[in-house]
Length: 112
Length: 114
Image 1: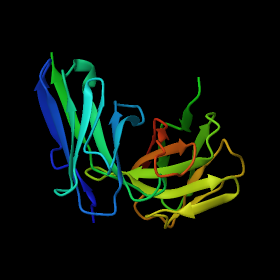
Image 2: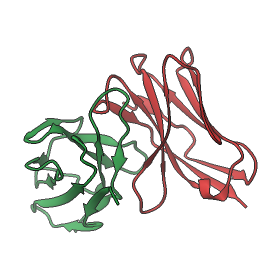
Image 3: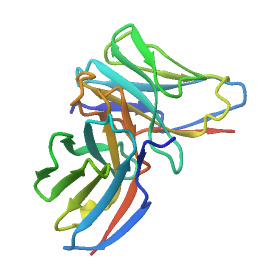
């Protein structure tokens, strides 16, 4: 049973525009959410996170929004750059790094 | 440079054979993890270790074994009991297992059955 879902397997965006990647979860006990980025032939790398006590966290071009009532979070990338082309994984934690649940990933392609 | 090294990049297993995937880290992290990724699925936790000589089963530990004799090393053995071993395996580490810890990943091993 997939507790963290990324329903869009792929997304294409023009360079300079906004990329919005979505993630839904089912477990109301999740209290910490993370996004990881993965390039081909490399392991995922941490991108940005948000605690359940916040509804927004921003780091440069990357902003994560959390809507607890809808059990939904999204990652906004503005402006999108070709180097952002990668697979993005959403992950949710219910108490620790040893209790992390990952989504299936969304492949973002930024077109120059 | 500090990081996590997984080897080999590609591995082939014959029926009934045990194979071992290597994972080494020089980040001085206490916690290490093994994840499995199948097409169309998220990463799933196989085993994790919080300290040397201790490890815990994750969600899909059946058919796998691990050891943690050194802080830097956390090898994963895929045994013949694992009936569907073809997958991409990722090793990760973190400073601890607290609720705000970030994982640092290796580049993965693709295991296939001959």
